[in-house]
Length: 106
Image (cartoon, rainbow, N blue to C red; front, side, top):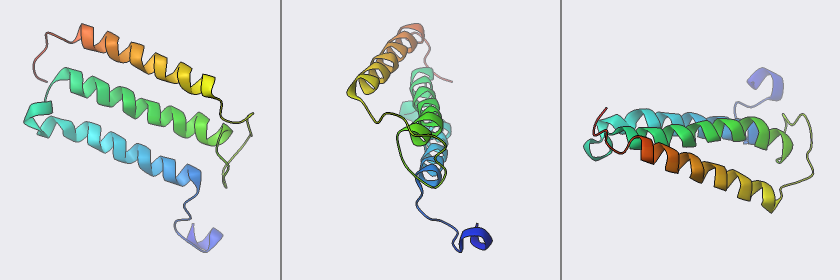
């Protein structure tokens, strides 16, 4: 990166969201060391949020944010897309909570 652009980090939206995704996955992996959060439900919620950050890194950054690595421009960010995403995440969390309610630890 330094040879190509003259810098190692440029706060580009793709670079920043890649970093955020790595941090979110690191948090999800380290939840097992916290005794209070050492259960399947916490791990499933963290996994869903982590995967959501990967999806946003791929679709959101490419289509909704502008940056050095933008490959296409969408119509812009709409409230209906955000509402649909939040409803899907809520439905997934409820399904995971119901399914894993009897499991105590990993």
